[in-house]
Length: 359
Image 1: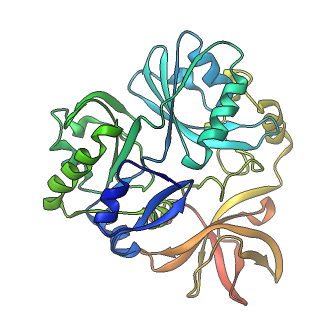
Image 2: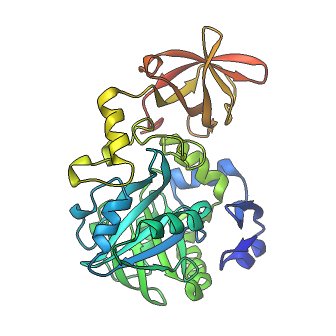
């Protein structure tokens, strides 16, 4: 197992560490519900340094990114970020990612930890145009401050005016003791979030500083357990569960990041044909109508017949009810559609709802 630069810090805080995406990662410090509610009500601090950072540079950088991603990166200006995905040649999804435009010929791609090697090889295989690629995943730590008080916490460590930052923007410059950091308003919880990319050598000092200034704002360290329930309450997808190499961006509801007008990209012909002829299944959000907790791979049923499987599911700490995501036939995907979820030998009633589950 790999370790983030904060491994010893997490151990000292008493975190429970588990293998995740090839890393020993903190799943919780105190309790999933307590950490979840801290983010919803105050602020939480996540170590997500396991994420991958690729830098694409040079006059061919944009051309390569346009070729391998589904969204239109030509719309970006320096200081803006964009959610996107890497389609494969069969119309599936290699990974989802965020593209940051640092300068006119410099971009940073942040990819999922479990897919770092896979994504690197995939992009490199498409780079027959000579764009400069650098995998700097081991050089950067990533600390995410999330919650209603996140802005106040981060503001204490910089002279930049955090209140002026809109969602999916970022700046590059000094932050606390890092001479060059990247501070972005991207996140995975639905709350105001600042993702702080700092050199790995500065990770421990930055983590401690954020905890120290966050104490008056009721900030606490938070683990992957809370991160998962937070993203699920927003209906955000998790790669490997809700999107995979075998799911189309259109099936996953990602048509909004699939821009055919920009020109051909990997898998675009197949995905465009799906748009023209229609898709057979669709990712939906559902909530249980009785007490129970849906889990990944539990069956989704209509009139006792299995029509799909749960891809993500849990108990919502805010709603105190079971919620989840899963694929069903398009004809059964309308809002309000009554379904059942097979939970521990019982078929519990549920209905399809619109995400996010909380607003």
